[in-house]
Amino acid sequence: MNKIVMLNEDSLSRAVEKLCEVDDNLKSVIDRFGLPPLWARAPGFSTLIHIILEQQVSLASARACFDKLNSALDEVNPDTFMTLDDAALLKIGFSRQKTRYSRILARAILDGSLDLESLIKHSDEVVFAQLTSLTGIGPWTANIYLLMALGRPDIWPGGDLALEVALQKLLGLEHRPRGNEFQHLAESWRPNRAVAARILWHYYLSK
Image 1 (cartoon, rainbow, N blue to C red):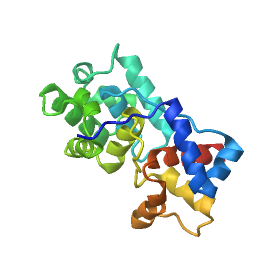
Image 2 (image 1 turned 45 degrees about the vertical axis):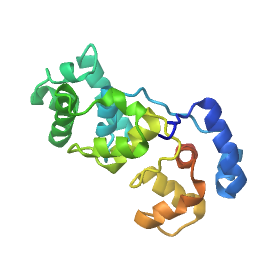
Image 3 (image 1 turned 60 degrees about the vertical axis):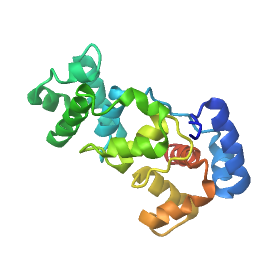
Image 4 (image 1 turned 180 degrees about the vertical axis):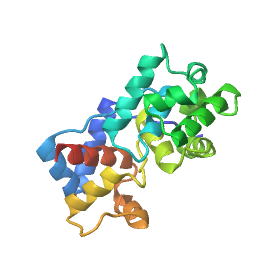
């Protein structure tokens, strides 16, 4: 069984150095804007709900909704979440679709079909498979959870708009890279693609 690696501030810094040695474009970002944040999130139900809220909306909009959820509950966990009816969640800012997705997640944890706490012990592939088996948790959501909550160093979240825009600007492309092209551009960054993602997010936000 492969050892599970989790990024921290020290390993992030070392990985940035390695990426700068192999990619001048990433190095130019570091030279201009400095080290990217770790952007770590606590693993668990609350964080996964936050990531679901971030699907296809601005981070600010998702954060506002998540803050309202935290204000409505003493603690955001599957039990407390299920005490809120659809009207309450709509008032907080949940769409009908995200209400459904979040309830599916909460029920899966409550009935034991998903052991969210144990995912920290499993490989990237197992975590991805278990999360994406639930309706409403697609590849992007699972990968962001792996990258930010579980700190896995080699996750490359396809479909991330900010990364597509950052790559287009940094590389001077005429279009946003997607699909196979998006994946291909990150191949040389293995096994530190999640660190490259942080550098590119840093570039996107700093620009």
